[in-house]
Amino acid sequence: MASIPENFLRSPSPNATLHKINFEHTKPAILAYKNNFAAIIDNFMTESECKDLLHLAEQSTRTNLPDSTLSPPKWERAMVNAGNGKEVMSVDSRKSGRIIFDSPEIAQRLLHRLMPFVRECEIDQIKDKPSVTGLGPAKRREVYNISRLNERLRFLRYEGGDYFRPHVDGRYVTPDEKEKSLYTIHLYLNGEGEQDMEELQPYIDEAEKKYYLFEEDGEIDLKEVGAEQVEVGDGDGGFLPAKQSLEKSETLLGGG
Image (cartoon, rainbow, N blue to C red):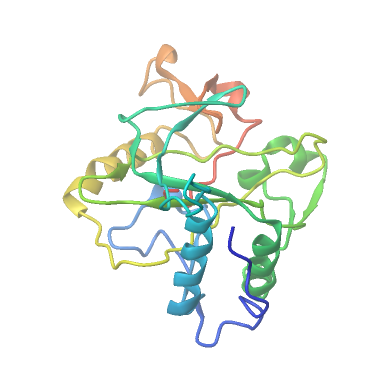
């Protein structure tokens, strides 16, 4: 495994700019997400830093061969979480290459660079935000302070025809139950990429349809949908009855 350069990610981003997303003013507007949080940080990493990070991830997959050389970098096919610590291949959901790279040191350096933007977005401390934590913690006036980034870094590589279908990221809770993930961070390391709006539109329409099923008090309007159809994702790949789901939250921050 390649060693992490001492000066890698040690300095602040030289030209980084923060843009908070207002889903009421995006093109097209997505009113269903108007109370959700997302932000873009342009130039968070330099081009050379992006290449170095990819190199470190790829080097972590190489193994010693009988002739004393190293194997080529290996991108495994990405799988989906099936619960109980198991993963399964599901091409209906996703198709891409993936490297899982555990590095507490890189996670800490990324967080150090990220913290000024986290504070500017006022998410370094979370309290009274039921849309993020769920209703239970908000009612109990629980306060969450950012502690670290998850050291399990996931690198995805998309080639021609690859995809990751719309989904909700599950919430990770540490074994000691002292930490839980509330937000997802994506770093786009290369490529331009363009969203196919014709492909995206059906998902926007579906989100809007679900949004308008809720009245202002948050109750589902059963005049518009049969009770047997009311299912809300629990963030872990399962579904809960609508009433029980109010103790859960879903924060959509994009793919990943």
